[in-house]
Image (cartoon, rainbow over all chains, first blue to last red; front, side, top):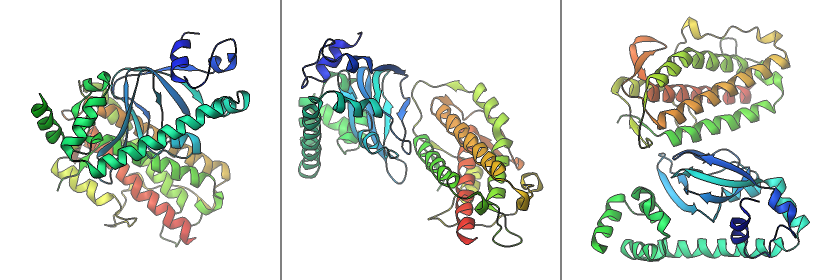
Length: 191
Length: 190
């Protein structure tokens, strides 16, 4: 299987191998997107759960005026998709867009659900993933409410993966809830 | 202030219309046959009118997109010119309310015998409407990656208003939003 190691790393909470989990490795389908393609658009139901092979993607919501407000990013080795729409099978509130040429592997909802039926150990994976998601969202909310723009910038740059440093600044600025001008000024100050 | 066109926002609005169309599809076809009063259109006639309105632009938009060059960075926002902006603003409903009543030219009047409409015919109208919305979505996606401003063409009302592809897509979308509201109002009243 081409992406065996990628999947083993992504699902590191499950002790995966082709021998013990053959159906799991057969579920994945590869898809590619050009830079700035919409992978999922707001108003459509997210049909897939993704693991990123390469590229950077952003997830954002639009304001009433149609301006982008970035919620997060995904990049190689991470999970991607509009998860709430995928789970609830309801139209997405968000856009998922490829910021760079992107290669993903994906499974559909039926396959995702079957994981928990075929392999009981995926319950633990699900618990850990949802726990991390919740803690991550709460942490981000706390940072947005309590930290200054400068502090948010510093914390983000300390833990920012190298991959994200190459994407347009306006997306990073939006993620940090600041204007591109403020982001640019803070970057100059830092350097 | 001139209308700002934001392609991602347009896609979101088109998807919203597609979802409303799915709701229409689940309704009894008879609700699309009834006119609220003698001079008003039925839901089916409104759908037909939107399809005619879209079709009037299909060749023009396809040609304009074929002539437009690709851009390096995708376009997030474009401003409209004064006259298209004026027209677009008048069409889009505001907070669910249709403003500025307009007369339809003969070319875009739907010719349907509403009393004789079958379920299959209503289904076909909904299916055609879906195709036009998907085509509009495809056009908008292309406008993100092309320099559409230099290529202009006459609007459906003639040379008095010229559109570039972004303006045409926004106009068609606002026209659809206006008439989807009309369909909802019509269904609610019959």
